[in-house]
Image (cartoon, rainbow, N blue to C red; front, side, top):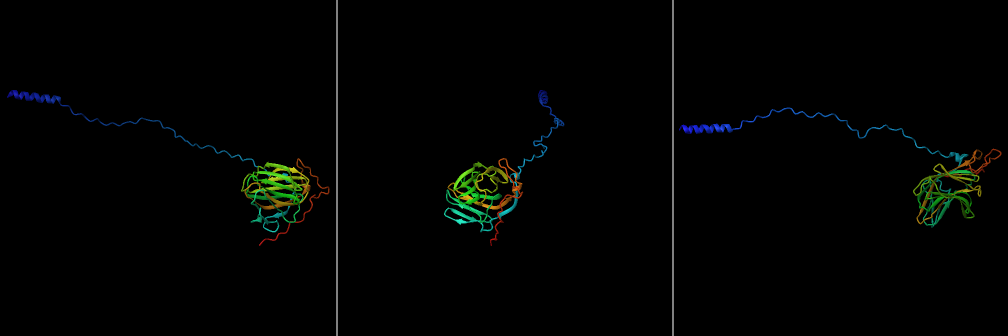
Amino acid sequence: MKRLMLIGLVLVLSAASCSVPPTSSPVPTDTMEPFSQPTATIDWFPTTPTPTPTLAPTLEPTSDMRPGLGKVIYEDDFSDRSSWATAVTYDGSIAYGVNEITLAISKPQRTLQTQPQNLQLDNFYLEITANPSLCSENDVYGILFRVNSPYDYYRLLFSCAGKVRIERVQRAAASPLQDWVYAGKIPPGAPLMVNLGLWVSGSSIRLFAEDFFLFEVEDNSFTSGGIGLYARSGGTTPLTVSFRSLSVYELETTTLRPSKSQTFTPASSGTPTRTPTGTAPTRTPTP
């Protein structure tokens, strides 16, 4: 009996020696974040000083190339439909629009032209606005001046390729005074609206576009005559060009300054050398 009790005690003591003592929970402590230095904010689009804009050079009007401009002696807004000849032909038509006159050609290699009634000029400055609306590269339009007959006059031509030419037509034969050159102020193509100027005094002929001087030629074949409008189809497509806002100024020749290629001799009496052309035609408003 005692032996059995001794064996039981030994087993109890052995079990106690093998038990694992309880593990204590760790005490939480504050975790310190690593200290970092502040960084600068990057401005990806910094403000830069606004520079003072430099103005582009302004081209000055060439008024010195149009000396002696006097009063308006003829003016036409094309509201009076009796001043210029109109027509309807197999080749095209010349007709009035709203404050304009239109030359329309429907056939290739055809010509139309028209003139106002009872207008004769010698020295003058003329301005008119041209509006080619249908126009191919080989088509031309322009102004006739110092017209003496259907076969004798000067012709100022503009092509829809942006070129210009002045020629003398004498006994129906055309001779260039200035052959085709590019006119920087008249871009090629259509539709287009361009203001044209023509200064004529003695043998000097000066051309302007958009108020700027283009070039000058000299010729004394014709000293006076009428004016007209002109169109010619050079391609295979229709040509339509309108003209509006015509003004003609007299030249006070005693105030003319000579150009590099022309010397003007004022009249000895000090009076203008221009031959009087009378007053502008009287217009009756169209109902």
